[in-house]
Length: 139
Image 1 (tube, one colour):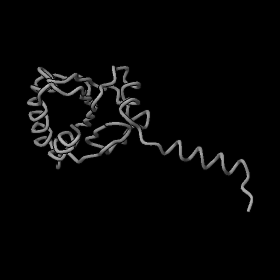
Image 2: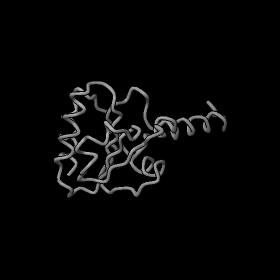
Image 3: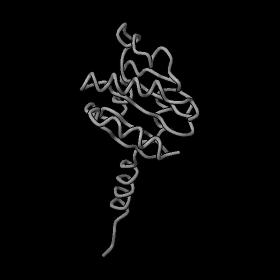
């Protein structure tokens, strides 16, 4: 059976298009310096109590990681009152216009994503504790 160049081209294009986005793409889209370790992206939807707990736990991280936190939210009075925003142990960025969703890096229903080494892990806000296990296992 003979494969036509068009079929091979379409297969190659499909493989390239399915490549998962990594932290370099996130850093490039947001115009930030790419950290060596990981980027945590939070889309603050869902359980508000869980979000507050996540923010508190993130605020207590040590700053020995070369990492970054991105929150998809507009700067607001409520957001500025979160201790993580006031005193983050890691560089913190706001994606106020949800550019990461527009560019297809994450979907509207995604809540927490951890980008590391060309891969991405997705977490539900109700199970946010798993994020810290994944961060700890990365080191």
